[in-house]
Structures are given as structure tokens and as C-alpha cells.
Image 1 (tube, rainbow, N blue to C red):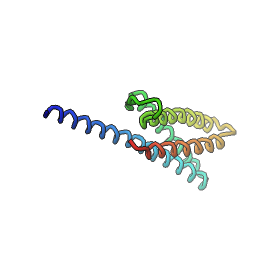
Image 2: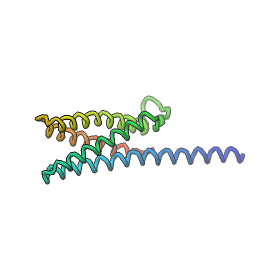
Image 3: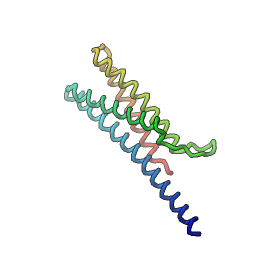
Image 4: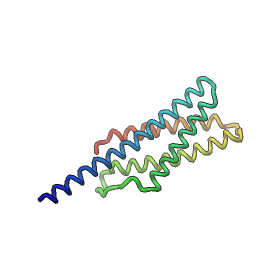
Length: 145
């Protein structure tokens, strides 16, 4: 009887800790997106390219964080029925999207480095996709467990 209660307690604590870890990972990425978007827009308003570069570098670091999460299998997908998509699966899809976004950031940084004519257009596109990712992670965080 005591062993069953101990096992149940362990499962409850593990599920709460895992949920908090996922919430922490998505919150960190959401704040990084917010900071990157804010720095880029502030750089455009004040006409300071260093702020735009700082925003792009924050996006790049966020991409490396997402790549680390995906490669180290930090997200465990539970078995569910075919009708309902789990929150963990949506988080995994979000982090894969962030890795693709990191590819666009690298392309934009190379355009900036080689002073290609369309570097400002690429920054506009980055901000647009960053806002989309921001609201994607926001909607995932609003999902019930």
C-alpha cells in the first residue's frame, strides 16, 4: 500500500515538474522573441543599426536554444488518440519552426555582412515571422494540460 502511494506521488511530482519545464522553455523563447522584436523596431525608429543587429543575434541565440532542445530530446511526446493533438507535440512543432527561423536569421545576417541590397527587406520579413512565432507560442501556453 505504501509503495503504491509512493509511486503515485513520484508520478504526480514528475508530471508537474515536466509541465513546468515545458512552460519555462516556452516562456524563455517567448521573452527572447519579444526582446528581439523590440530591439529591431527600436533600431529602425532611432536609425541605429546596432540595435537591429542585437535583435537578430537574439533570434540566432533562440534558434540555437531550440536546436539544443530538439537534438537532446527534452520534449517527450505522450501517446494520444488521432483526434487530439497534445501540447507537447505543438511545442515540438514550435521549436522546429524556430530552427527554420534561425536559418532565415543566418541568411539575413549574411546579407547584412555582404551588404546585399535587400538586407532591410529581410529584416522586415524576420520581424513578421517573429511576431507569428510569438503568437504561436502564446496560443500554446494558453492550452490546458
